[in-house]
Image (cartoon, rainbow, N blue to C red; front, side, top):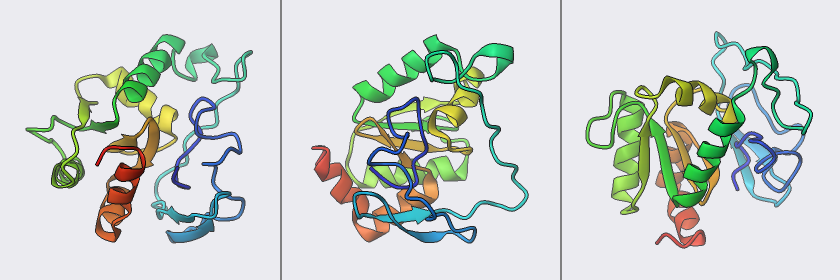
Length: 178
């Protein structure tokens, strides 16, 4: 699991093996230390003009609260869990594989295709509720978002860096996709 992943309903966060090591975030981006498993943590630079995602109150079960319109609906989270968990590689993108509507989404499609991996894609522009929920689900504010082996991998910048370094191929091999 990559250190840049955020908490997602207890599966990737909560201090587990994929949680970002304390003190590893750097404002300028780049390498931010190592995760609890000893793997390097790559942290993207956050634009200074972008406000952080709002903190959501926990619900009675410890998950996101749905009171007052905050948090995602439990049935939507369940649908996302099912979709991400049942497909080895998932790309949440703007547009479709054959007609990306954003340069970053197009880059992600081209990287995955050149890696010769089959992947499912979902057009978040077609489903506004999913688009909004994905930002909370992954704790990642932008699209595209790539999931590999049921876990959030990163956005376009992380996918590209991993492709160029060979780390993407290693990850695909590790989850049995190559």
